[in-house]
Image (cartoon, rainbow, N blue to C red; front, side, top):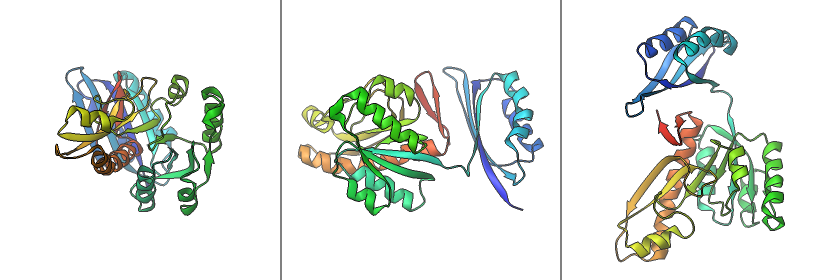
Length: 283
């Protein structure tokens, strides 16, 4: 029998009987649970749950919804149901640096990122050849016409390609508060520093000046507050005091690649829960 998989995400205050009610409804709907991950943040008394389950080819979201809505109302749940066969459409924004772009495209080509990449957008022409090599449309936006006008052009392209997620793969432009609010929770940035330290420009130079013993990268949601959005994933590597800034930059690229791919992967798996300005990653 042909099957498909769906993912259910739930956020609510912690209460007795949650798991029993959720799993019982899935069973009554003919679902077979493949993965269940849940966490109660005791500091704030909040419950987060992500469940993937297999259903028959005749599964109807509306039938499950009619069963689940009374439960969700009883427990005051914030919940979403995703059909895993419907791939997210991810737009990549880049400037002149190619390593993060290549990493995303290669991981996608290898099947490690379950999405579609319909468009690459840049404020420079330098990386157009990469888009051509991967047979992806490339657009160059003119930032010189002013932020409001150029972001309107950018928004038009994103809408044209029915974009679900925007990934800033070392896109060296500060997005306006209005743009970030429009894409709230759907725009991921890679910062080449271990936030909240070394925000803004030239973080490797800042880190070298402080004599740090580790350098890192941060994948986070972009917000109107520069480099202060909710953090999705971070990683670090040790560095010696004998390293130059150029060596920091070279070594840091490997961390940036890993961190950005992991941040995007977590988003595509519906593993990221946002609550009061911070993330909880449940897998």
